Length: 194
Image (tube, rainbow, N blue to C red):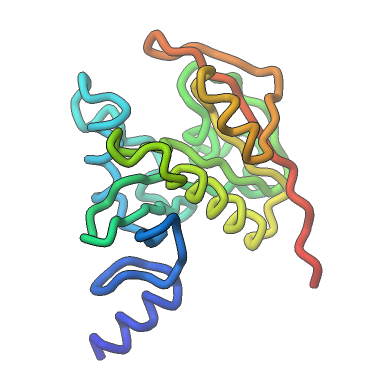
């Protein structure tokens, strides 16, 4: 039973007992990972001066959240991102959708099915190897497969060009949090051909 469960997890692109088959940058694999593995990497990369609770976002453990990571050949998690689904019924007053908005960000009514990716983080020694870009592309693929009409993120202003290279565009919305400047970026997704 355990062997077949591991094979099923691999087929879904989850890292459990073995490397997953989803191809990432050279020598890595992109997998769906438990949020408990995501938090420590987020903490070290994004907000090391804060406590671990600071990097946890509402909805991280909810049914609308999925977490992806890049694992090096040795199994070490080196880059992570979280993807949150927003539904048409959650047009601005649903707590899970509101939780997807960063503190200080304007709450914009988004009635269409959408997805937000958050907390993209890569260990410094693994940057500039294509891992972050591969994770964003995975989020775009997952959002498109879920029939989302758009995917968006709150990007640190100094990283806007990185996201633009992946096809996201600035919406004109911006905000500041904890002394850092953010811009909201999005990509309108074309429906998959049936």
